[in-house]
Picture 1 (tube, helix red, strand yellow):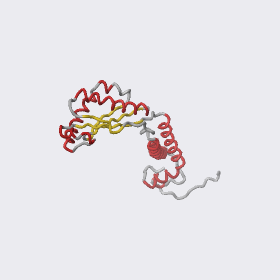
Picture 2 (cartoon, helix red, strand yellow):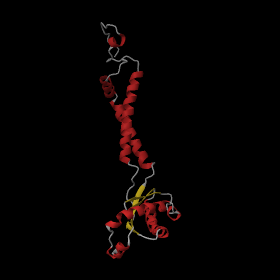
Picture 3 (cartoon, one colour):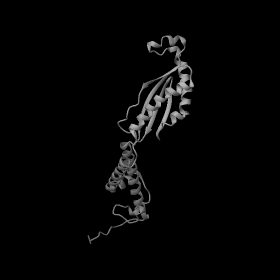
Picture 4 (cartoon, one colour):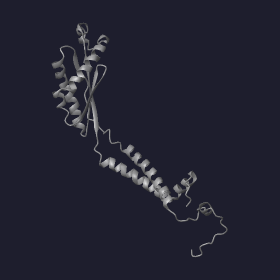
Length: 216
């Protein structure tokens, strides 16, 4: 075949080996999907939310209204940040993790406890137990303010990973690219002369006639 590879030649190679390309692409896509479906451990995630209030004497007198006043928001946010440090370093909290991945973060005076793991029920239990124990940690460390549960954790219905569809699409792309590259490589190492090869371009000599193969 000609040694120079052009876009036109690549398109010809792809069309010539289209069955091989489609087959290898489908095999790769199916392999990635089956591996994702049956060999990767599903991971679940759930979260619970707490609030921290840094109330002063004025707002405390109105606490029966069940409101968080704007004058306390900045102080509550600062208190929440300090409180998270104690939560992340409290033995009574970390002992509840039960081999799960736990993240405790805050947005203003709201604290979110996110738990990830391979068992959905365990994730929900860990998140709720942390919220229940968090009140004791708060009472031990702070002489003012209050903490409450905004939202309890629910058992997740579906895993957040693996994403079987995404992995199947990754396999499709890898299979497509690999099959095209293999096709081009096979064409490059194939030194046989094919009927559609340009002999004049290959050997730089004029071609005067072609002898047909009468044996076929």
